[in-house]
Length: 195
Image 1 (tube, one colour):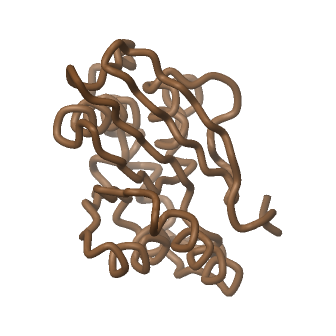
Image 2: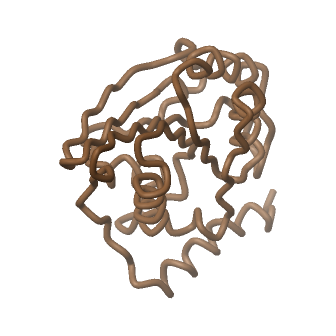
């Protein structure tokens, strides 16, 4: 059955791409002098199919694993896309740490290369020396134009190989003042039935 609302994000994405300058990813990534900044990349927890569904039972368990994994690791800022599954994925951590997530809306999420450039620059400038969590998504992907926001942020930070697109992926990127980024690719919460 055709559902017009399901087409909206794709139409919006194509329209924005057609009207933007098709940004490329920046390449220089430096923490401010005298600092080392850590960025943690995770995908939202498991959810059922749909336009903006809540977390399913497996996702509710994984968000507890995310809380247990990160609650004592110095997170100083939380960023997430403003989708229900992303907000629910980080809400326990927000409560535990007393940090309100900075939510990224649909218009900003549409152009993932521009978003990656803006967020990485912001994190390294405004959260220098801190630990920033990004809870992102695998989309929106436009063939031969852009990958999803997780992939574009990962590439913007200098990542190679597979981006952290599985539910259990937890990538830690340590960015020094000299621009050398060190990647720690790990997992949390066990394997997912959706991967």
